[in-house]
Length: 520
Image (cartoon, rainbow, N blue to C red; front, side, top):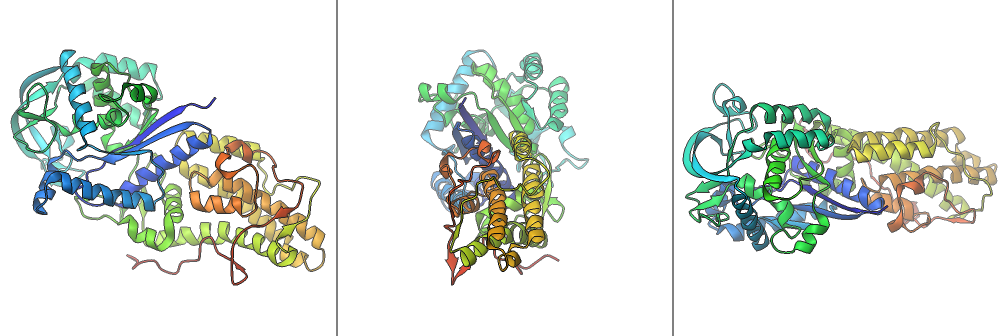
């Protein structure tokens, strides 16, 4: 039965434009949103920016702007990149918005009224890059944060505490009753160990900051970035402003976040929900990192690659394909321009693109763009039945194993189709036996149809082109995975509707020679 599906990404610091490591998270979440829509579910896909931070205030000051104007300007720049990547998000929240301020203040007041917040003072190591306090265990022997390669500073300040340690047993019980909450499973033991051995009360306020959300019961303080930022997941769907909307969408079905912030989402956040009297989210997925020259991309380190540099050359679908194919979503991957070109030419230009061009071109040149009716279903070129392919593909999609889903499409659909084409050589057969050539082309159209359906969450534009080039039924917007499980071509005439340039098939993916200066 169709259902509502609410998923989110982590919100981003807008102290600079997004890099391809940030984009990796977003396209993975967008792929899941598109998959859920294929299943017929009503999807709310939330993204946004984390704006109530010291980093943002400092950057705005450097540019001579007030923080709000700077945040709005940067939000437009982020949205520009996300549109270029063809991300179909439902809402984009800025934590400087009034709806977020209102919801945050309502929530922290609720937690205070429930007896889980108390006043004290705090001293500890603080990483400006992470905007969080660190234990000695989190730092190296020189008190440097390994994520940002920067020395932590010692801070002491009055604050309000959230009594996180009081939720140890409740959290452990929650994990036991909800074994799929922490994903992938490799992150599970890390969180359990943290809760069992290191769960401490946390500072949730800052003093002396002009920018941020005021604590309603003590306006001298602003709400600390994590207690503020995590609340975007509920303020965007009406917490504190629209109870009907909030009741419809909460709890979230899936939070997609980087593995470096797993502990905040899997320990602090569900405890906050319990303290505020709302249900915790259903699942948190901590994805891996995209590395560049073996290092995690980081604005602080300065080794980032701009998404727009690639997008202007190859478009969103090739960009999406590379990162979801080459970088296992639960793990880490590496980017280089040389590897990008290799994968693009081998998988997209040669394999998928060449199959499409061959079939469409042969039908256009030799059959006037029409294939005659065929009484029997086409031969399936691969050894694995379509029903089994779809079943395995669905399992990969549900578990966010996108690289394995794409490998499956190529290994079991596209590679066998190209091998079948090479074996049957319809470009030669058409010269001696047009009827036999037409049957072979019908056989090749079928894996193109199946690939188009299974690629819909990954390559939105190209998959649509593949499908609509042949006028398949049902309508593209209503396609679901089951349509790939069975032969669905009409036994009537098959008409090719794809576009051509100067009488030739327009390539889906023109071969690349170079798209940028390679690092060697």
